[in-house]
Length: 416
Image 1 (spheres, rainbow, N blue to C red):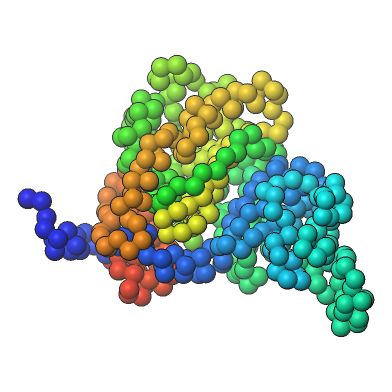
Image 2 (image 1 turned 180 degrees about the vertical axis):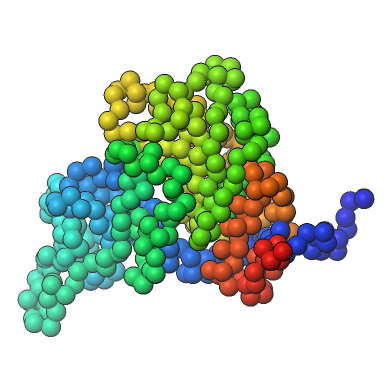
């Protein structure tokens, strides 16, 4: 068939069923993006950091969820809590540093307090307002500090020690109900003993957050990863299963990676995770865009923060065991960096792939059909993981992924 004209290019694929493609407007439309923040990111559990990044009482980290500023801190009782990073007085952001400690006083604040530099209101690690400057003089008895605590957020530390937060006070599912089933394949490995972050970096990438998630969710693009072709392309690799779970999550089954097949590499059997067979490789894709990857000696997480329809911030963490000796930790770092490096799940090819998609799906670009129609018995080159994800997306958004102007309907492929 010759190259298509515009009408043919824009037509729905005739031989595919609804659910086997999506409309590119779900990646590029600014209104859809804003709706995602309200309907999805403000409603679900989000992993914001790891407990090892708050090792001591009064340690904190700041972040955002759906543009809302968040502060996570460890109290003197050793409990980790999360609050809106917003002063109750005039809506000022309280803490601007990305991380640090409240133990020592700052130029504009007292020790052991979160202090708003604007008018010196102070809060303790439980979110209680403990000081209002000139409280009696200004407010008499009309307002008191006991009524002006921070907005607390639901927070759980679980699943390998990650700190999970939701903006939704009415969330219907506990974290365990939301994500626990998808983590079952690696639960005994990551919960056997405390973990510790040894690698952190973040990148802002010019693409939609769902496109980044797609490249974690499918392995058909591994043809562009030379390392994966050399160390993994065998019968066991192609037989790995993509398994869908409730709430749009997917995990990918394991196989033994042959690292020694790559020049300059060697087997990683010497240093695995507890109860994990040597050189194994599991991956979990968590709706709406988080990735957890246990690859032999290192545990990796990608946490997305959507910044716009064509921009996403990704925080990358590499984790080992807190009990590692210095020699073991260096080995984990070397293993982590020779796979993931600074760019993403594998090598820089992933970044090139999603940035190329982002460049072709800028806001207000014309809609086109993005295909998710490969079927290979739900193994790694099947695109069932993406079909499963976008069906869940459609439910949350009440939009049909293949035509977002229409209300959600169950995909035709699921009905047959």
